[in-house]
Length: 172
Image 1 (cartoon, rainbow, N blue to C red):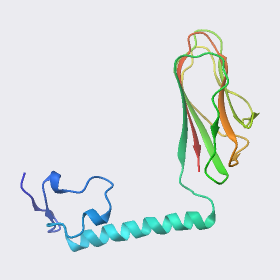
Image 2: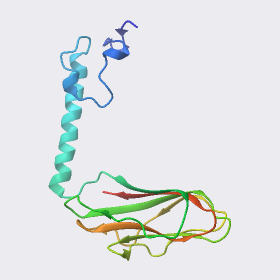
Image 3: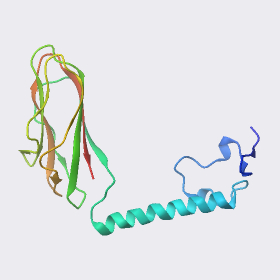
């Protein structure tokens, strides 16, 4: 497909001539048809991103949230979760624990606990009563996850027939 001019007079190429999503400005520099203003905009964006990263490092605490995922496919059983060690070199802050139960229990409750170093970080277990599935967001009472310590997600109650549990522990 041939290129053309966009509404601002910038020459556009066919899709196969464009940089891949997320590509840095260096892939776009000196590329035929990519305007100088587009190149400078990409450079400014990359510099702004670097400045944000430097600010995060200087403050010692990142504000960029990311999930630590846990999942169990199939029918649930009572069990202690595998430990996930914080190896970030710093204390992480836990914002929220998001859980999703795909298949509800026909009887009995599903209860889930989050622990750091073997101690619960919740004021009470995350609980799905019988016939209840879906999403639950829980704010922990303890939000600090120290470097070198383990986080576990334990299934303390499985109910009957409950299945497909996914947990995302959102940290920064």
